[in-house]
Length: 129
Image (cartoon, rainbow, N blue to C red):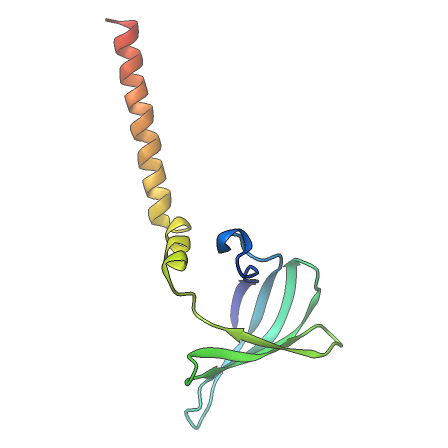
């Protein structure tokens, strides 16, 4: 069983691409390997935690030629829609991953402590010249 979340990508050019889309889903499914070496298939059920849709089934399969997972999703009882998963690449993606990483959290704490200690030392010398 595999569990993950998915956030829709932003519209092209939407606030520079830094703001995510308006839907977020919890994905729950299973991974199967093709016995003939044709690739990996992930199939299961999605449930929107944020956004306008509700829930339904999905299935994506690895396509080696395009280096993407391609498949479909549907709302329960609704029609199927094409779905492509691809890796984020480029400078904007690298920046986004760094900003949301533990390295950025550590850097932020370092800066906060540095400013706090500098302010404390300056305050001490201002009060006790």
